[in-house]
Image (cartoon, rainbow, N blue to C red; front, side, top):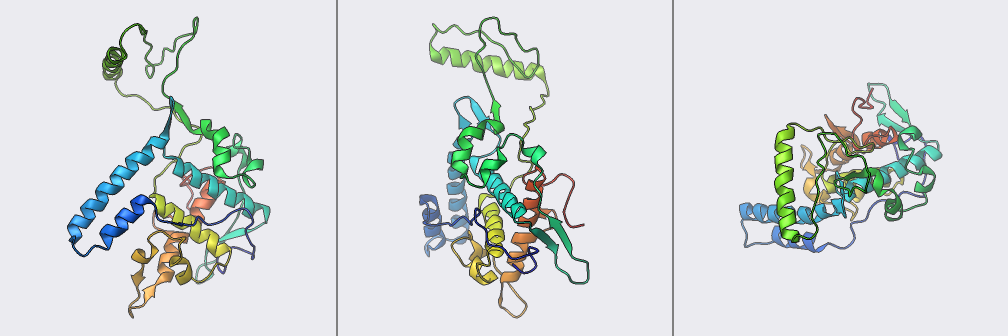
Length: 294
């Protein structure tokens, strides 16, 4: 807890995400990494192919019936979890310490969720609701509608982003799809540059799945006084932590530097504390103008 929050607390609603058992993909990657018969270059190429295949599978979660999500569901899950953590810290009146009191003055930010930015999220439910339950009734907040069937007497959109077409359902599906594809390509070409519809709730940056989980877990575990930096990084809560550790000048493992990166980031890369404050202000992953270090 030291140098992280303004008073000691125990989190009741927020918890770290345990890695648990390895998935089939993780076991496959691990077996390649531990192999003595595959050289380093081939290992890297094999793992790259496995991850690419797995990402395509994950990407299918963006599509449901006729709606499409801007990012994979995992991204929205992490947004939800950071928001839940923010609501819990706000409820307990906790401030977040951004800079340690060394030569420069300490910088502390009170945790306060901007409720105007989350009007449609039902914030009063989030602390006591898990993501899967909440998602069923709130997925529509993040959807882009690709197509819709117009009812008789419905007014037709005149926007160049939209294409209105008539389909003869008596024709073969394959022929219909071929014609639609032709019409869409032709319309896109003639429309020129198109502006994507802006969603009210959108993710404004990208980060690897394991990286965002590691940042969130380190913040939660530190707040709950789970243990030392070494104990946290070597635990099942941190994805690939052992491979990320650097060494100090005397050859010892530098757990402190890695933990600092997870919590405070470096340069333009936001750490868990900055992500949390951005979420409280209504942005995930990064606030467009604030760094929270001033």
